[in-house]
Length: 178
Image (tube, rainbow, N blue to C red; front, side):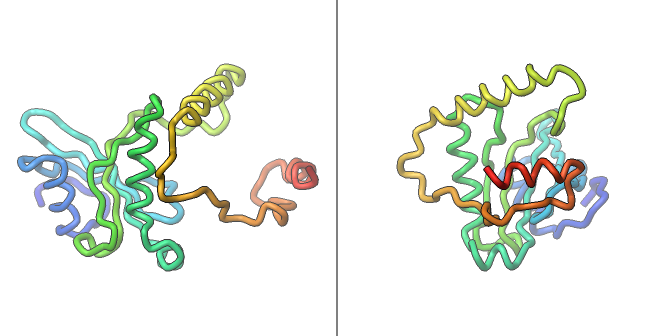
């Protein structure tokens, strides 16, 4: 591989991703994206013709989660397809390896969206909340009939209580009583 890389991804995975992007794609760089708790997430930049194309590779590494939900990659791919009908900026599915038969572990390859995560804006909170609400309206207008999965929470909402990770744990106590 004649690319720059700050992480190791098996060559078979990179070849799979390149073939899915374009038969003439060449790997330019690989960069780990931080923040994924249950997955390894990487930004891969390809040279395709004279242009660069950036994609995101998500590899599902949490074996316990995969035991509970062996169709995780398929579920993610179909969720992205459904989300693309919501008229919001969302990654597009490029390819997925449901069982890990090609990549070694289940994986999803998707387009990369430019931007950054803003969990709490420093200015103009009202504009930020309005933007979230507008996106939710578009999402809820999508007809999900026929979607094979139903929402469920990973946490028991009745036992949330005090959240030690929060900078405002007392707010969780109030909300857990609602």
